[in-house]
Image (tube, rainbow, N blue to C red; front, side, top):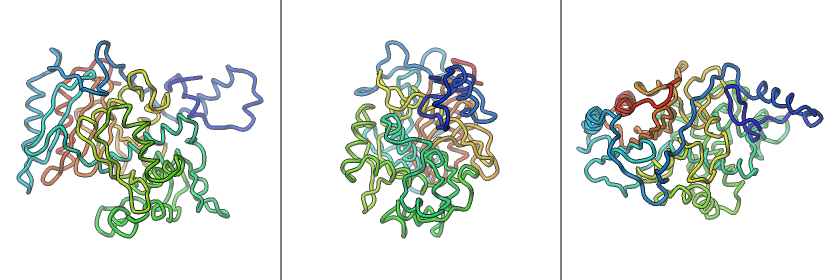
Amino acid sequence: MIERRGGHGRPRWAMRRRTGLVMLRSRFFLAVLAVVLLVPSGATALVPLPPQPAGVPYPTSVWPESRPSPDVDATRLASALDAAFTTVGRSGVPDTRAFVVVHRGAIVAERYAPGFMRDTRFQSWSMAKTVTQALTAVLVRQNRLDVHARAPVPAWQVGNDPRAAITIDHLLHMTTGLDNADGGGGPDSYGSKLLFGAGSRDVFAFATNVPSVHEPGSHWAYSTATSMILAGIVGRTVGGGRNELAAFMRAELFDPLGMRSAVPEFDRTGNFLGGAYVWATARDWARFGLLYLRDGVWDGRRVLPEGWVDYSRTPAPAPNNGVYGAHLWINGAPKEGQFEGLPGLPASAFWMAGNAGQFVVMVPTRDLVIVRLGEMQTATWKNVGTMIGDVGAAFPTATPEE
């Protein structure tokens, strides 16, 4: 089995099925064919994900804490954190409500706005999309979902419906071609109707009841509805309803990481609101980020399948995409209409992000997790991106950036 791309290939779960391969006897030929078929055209090697440093325990129960190491610019770090809390909105409270910085597996900086503390739960908004992605990954590891299989949505499998060609992979990459992009965010946008309007009672039914406007895989569009569809598939695969799904989340994802504060929300029909609604403390969001920085392994236990994080941080293969992987953002060059990345951070950085500037950022070349949570009453996306980049710039590069 080939484990990595960039000259190394992909793990077995990511291999597309090809009829006739079972007849091929040559292991060498199979290995070469796997690389040719599975590595996206133009894909470049990814920087390695850092292991947990020797002697630093995983924070399943208690976060290890330390002062910044001598190779960290502590003055620059303190100045960047001060700046992050200077923007004050209408509430009279700083827009940034929590900042946690994890370096080499230990918390080296942590700060909260007045009225907020370590045990405050913060709403994920779209960071919940990555929680949905992680739950999908667990089911892939358990061989209960196949990323290249057709999405199991019964309404799409009738007649010659073009939506029948949509796969789990398309959902993860947001390249379904469905007419369910978020839109501009106003009250009449599709995303607003999904979360707050007609679609909120049964988000899965609302999100799947849209036409196809592009061939699957040919067009990227940011879509909370796509994550709701994926979350619905997760729930139906687990089976048993809301309580069983909540128990699955806790047993397979939250509890192994020590994310004891995590609270997912569900709609009235029992669908997990996996596009926007998970609550957790800043420290627990840092745990979730550390899972991805550590290649999906937690204290010797593989939570996400081998190679899943590399799959997640590789650009979705659509011509109009440069900054999105599989339910994670990446620090690439944006195409027209896409958000600019995080200035001051290397190309290796990848992250989950949510409305009002929720961020969990992973920087492999600096063994760094940065969590920023709060609001954007006065701050802008550019402001928040700059403050995160300024914090990251205080830390040394341990491996080549590219």
